[in-house]
Figure 1: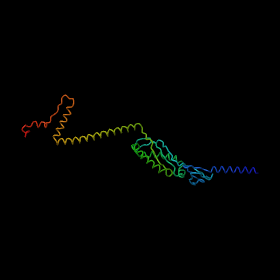
Figure 2: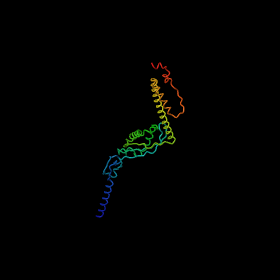
Figure 3: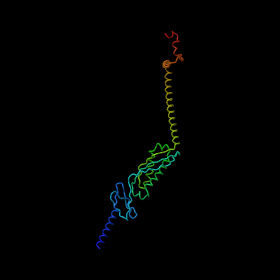
Figure 4: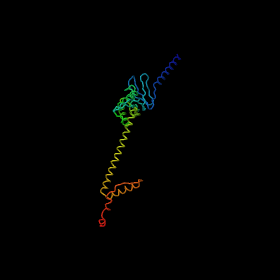
Length: 256
């Protein structure tokens, strides 16, 4: 009888130890436990040591650290009907563990699928030039849309980064031709502006020379001097009559 009592007490002690060990949970600083009692939401526990009553209560662990989600490459048609392949990376974390467990079956998969559809929807409203040059603004637009839709799941989308925008070869060549044409256009505009400024300066110089006959003669002599410096054997040039006017006047007029 005594032996049977000892065996029974030992078995009961082992059972109590097993129940106690199975009811103890230790949650890290970045973890929370969503506790259910008889299927109903009981509360959010942690971090640290918590007790879960076996059979009556169940606990679901939730990680609160930021999750990096790589969005697979998506085929996007821009507003100007250009087909591109775009992929991105999304940073999000759980801020309300109870909503993340109760409101959606799998918050990670749900966020991934929502990110793919949102990426196509937002980028499809913009032209190709915006995708290539305005990535920062597009990142903010996608982040705001995702954050608003995942708020009911207790999820905070903190950042979205578009990684690559890939074009087919024909589109790359077309963009290169467009860039080359733009450079040629700018070169012609700059050349035309230079010609315009030069013509304005020449017009101003012509007006000055027209008002001062002596200045015109000095300019003429300067031109002759520069021509004489060349290695030409023969120089034919017109002689302005104004230079000979003094020589052609009678001596009596000059001595007056």
